[in-house]
Image (cartoon, rainbow, N blue to C red):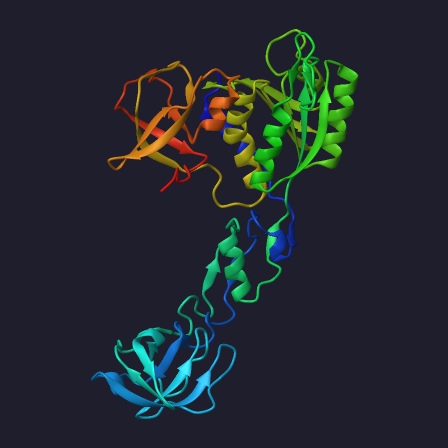
Amino acid sequence: MRPLADAQRDVLAAMRPLPVEAVSLWSALGLALAEDVVAPHDVPPFANSAMDGYAVRAEDVAELPVELRVTEDVPAGHVAEGKVEAGTAIKIMTGAPLPAGADTVVRVEDTEPGDGTVKILAAEPRANVRRAGGDVEAGTVVFEAGTRLTPPHLGSLATIGVASPEVHRRPRVAVLSTGDEVVPPDTAELGPGMIRDANRPLLGGLLTELGAEVIDLGIVGDDADALRTSLLRGAEVADVVATSGGVSMGEYDLVKAVLAELGDVEFWKVAMQPAKPFAFGHIDGTPLFGLPGNPVSVLVAFEQFLRPALLTMMGSRFLFRPRIPGVAGERFVTDPQKTVFLRVTVSLEEGRWVARSAGGQASNVLSAAAAADAFAVVPVGVGTVERGDAVTLEMFRWPESRGW
């Protein structure tokens, strides 16, 4: 069997970044920057108030309480006409530019208004002032090339006027399920030996979450001509083709034969569980990922091969899910000849992340994967993990709060 790390290395070595294009901020979520972004100006561009209150001089509020004369009222989006002089204050709203002469903003709740005056009851010198460049200074690299854009990234780019960032194009992935036994999910009544197709909805969700565009090639039965036609179409319209099923050793695993005919596709037995049977190569220059047929195997193969490959094509700096140390909350017995990916839930207990089985660990038990937060990764040579043993957790979902 091929070691997992070697298989991953070979796949990633064959990937190339997709072309670069400028997209709107509304379309950039999940994509990776193709170049460093440098701030053209300070953010904020001017010193401003962090609170609704009164702009004053620190020396005028050194001894409290004190009454000051109010000379102006400055809402956000406006600039004071005058300056703050000794014994005066300017009423100011959050975000409004700090008037000349002022170095402190007193919160409105720490004041009592009078007739053209304000009594300052409490104040901290130079408090509640946002300095120019306090968020980002002009000329600094705000985000490096390869950064995948999250909502806060998009907002930050907007503050410096980058409305159309240069990113690597969104990958197009053609998805295909195979097998005479596979029927659409909306099939009302299952015939003898039939199963509903879980793999395309699963892959479609994983790809959409990643930021890829999904091209659905549907279900193809055990028909070599139909499979050949679908695969060639996928290679023509997509950047990557991903199939599920038909890559093991069965007599009717036609994907293997057709792929070998169409392109330079290799079939591996990877030393991992689940997802040992795996195919990788190219059809007419388009990368092809032949995933196993069991849905949990599809999930694991996606996470270990297809997801990092697509992130490479997207130009991302980081390719794999975060791994954190944890401990086993129960005993696990695995195959010591393989890297095993157990589907587990995690909980923070006394400062440690504790992993427990999310349910059945067979490669067809998708419900356990749906309940899981992570893979507990058991390396080759270990086999048995006792309760309390250290374990590596590959997080694909962080637990939401379960309540108050």
